[in-house]
Length: 218
Image (cartoon, rainbow, N blue to C red):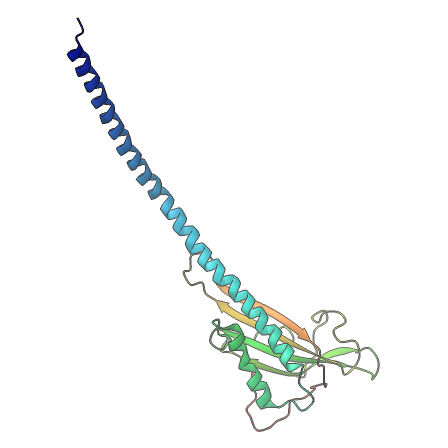
């Protein structure tokens, strides 16, 4: 016969068994959480490192693009009588604009003045390099050629030079990018070009004022 005391004892044992089962399940859940974290942690670390490298890479593109634009813009605001010292001073602005991606240490900027050659008042027969100046430690690998040479066909965008003696200033900037963490394969050159026409004069020549020209490394 099931007495009150025996019933109470059975209920107590049942509750203890349930508590024991719950505690075991709870421990198992903690173990599962640790396993899940161990699996997810490397993935999260990969995403974090990749995000850092990608963010720096995009910032470098933005700064290098802006430096090319700024240099062509500065050069073409000058009047006739552009001097070597003025060119050198404007070149120093490149590192300020591209900071912290210093072009002077890990890149090169090539500024080229291209002039239309031919009959006065008519469309140019060809395009010639009037002058070229560079800034930065790396060698200049310009696609336009050396000073005094003819520019290859198809290199200059259409309608940039429409008449003889008209000039366009082109800034080519190349920067050797290295990721901070090196997790993503983003290392290599970042390159941008910017084309501007002079707005106040032809700046066909650079005046020698005694300052050393910003020569190009080949």
